[in-house]
Length: 392
Image (cartoon, rainbow, N blue to C red; front, side, top):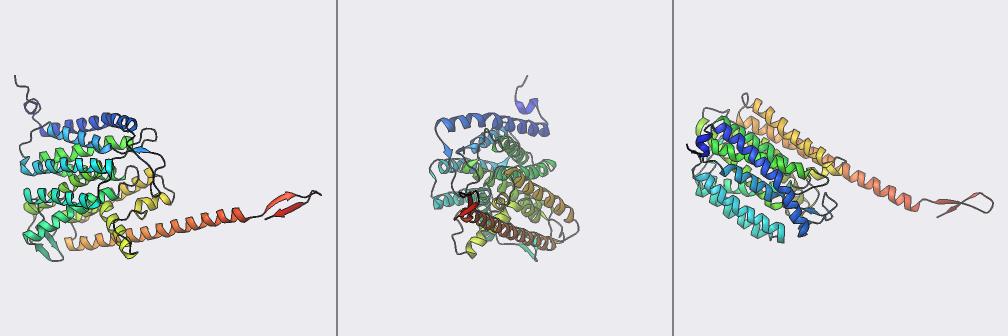
């Protein structure tokens, strides 16, 4: 009798479901241990002026996500794994230690960027994971290989940092990562790309386990750079692979309705739109694009009175609704028309961000005015005859 797991459980769908259970369990059970170690060793993130939390908090939740995702994925030997995922795992390990060092010692930005570029080149060039078509958007089809390589590496680096940027309130980076990886994983599973489906859904399950603690008031933990870099890297790889598979299998110049790039942009609209908006505003204000501030949409929502949970849930809802709606529209419009539709959504996003920023400014000004009024308003005391006397 053989005890090889793949022979005992031959159905890939069941294998993936078991991987999700394993990923969830490992992350769920490991994070309390990680929290205890962080507290014993004083590995806590202290709040600063722009922070959305008020007390020192452990910031190594990414270690639990890493352990859950990799263990759940590596337990099976999928025949369609190929050399792409070997390069991805190598890059993932590199990013894990990069993030770990950054969480411990605050790595220099240029060193982080250089490491991300090297790892992205390893995956893009080393496994030939490259976008070489614009799917007819604005009449552009095939693009030169070198241009595709540069574009894909740029996408990897930009998206890795975009997930790092949206990790500013409880649950946002983890929730968007969970939704997007689950969406890609479902597509890969339905199209029998088993190894990609297993990695996608294992990550999604691990992030679900992490969110249980990220939202907790008594046992809170952050994913840190260890987690956000890893999540951004895997989700970007899944997005690019989703685009290239649609390009290889379904696309021809006569088929204008293959909308993979547009669907990816909509599914990842929160990190993409937020990064474009924040970087643009910083440049317009003649500040460094990399200087931290509270211009992010999630900060604006919180500063306008929303809780972390409500702000994150509203952005989850936006992501899901726009993705489902765009998936429905793809059968009726060309990629160029859908791209214009996405541009309109981005314009609305910018308008809402400007309105929230103006509202926050007015709330702050009103609060200051009340404080000044309270400090300078006369206090009334009783005089000798019992009549009130004003004292400034």
